[in-house]
Image 1 (spheres, rainbow, N blue to C red):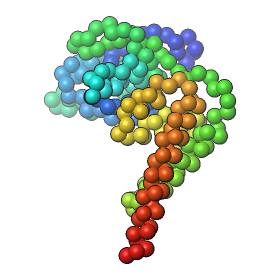
Image 2: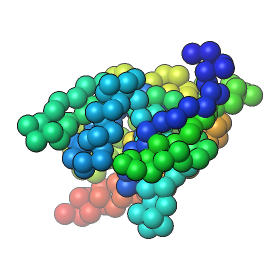
Image 3: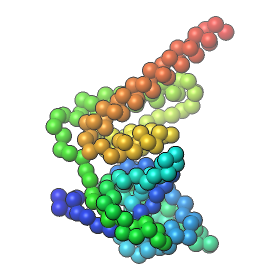
Length: 216
C-alpha cells in the first residue's frame, strides 16, 4: 500500500456493533439478520467486500469515531437470506462525516496508522509476551483448564499489540482507547500495565488456593 493510499479519503459503509472493537489482522465472525444490513452486505459483496466496524457504547448510546475496516473473507447465505460471515480486520479509519444514514450508514472516512517508532519496540514487545505467558500459566493453575497461546502469536510489535488488545474481553471502552492510539509503544505500554495488574491478581488468588489446599 502506498503512503498516498493510506491517507486517502473514501466513502465506506458502516456497521455499528455494541461493545465490539475490531483490530487490524483480527477475525470477526458475524451473523447478519437485520434487513438493512442484509441490503448493505449484498451491496458490499458486489463491490470490494469492505465495510467499517464501529463500536457502540451501550451506556452512552454513542458511536465511536474511530473504527476498523473489515473485509468479507467467507460468507454463507441462509434460506431466509440471513448470512453467516467471516471477516478480517484491515486498516483503521476515522469518520470525518456521515454521507447518509438510510437504509444504512455510509461515512466519509480517512485511514489512520501508527506513527513511525522513535525507539526500539522489541524489548517492550518481549515483556508483553512474557506477561501474557504468565497470565496464561496462572489461569491454567486456577481453572485447571488447558489454555495455551497460539503458535502463530504475532512476533512483530504492532501486530502483537493488536492481538493483545483484541483479546481483552469484556472491556470494550479500553479496547476502543487502544484502537485509537496511533503509537505502538504507547499501546504496548498500556497493555503491559493491564497484564501486570491481571498477573498480580491471579498470583494472589493462586497463593490463596495453595494455602487452602495445604490446610485441607
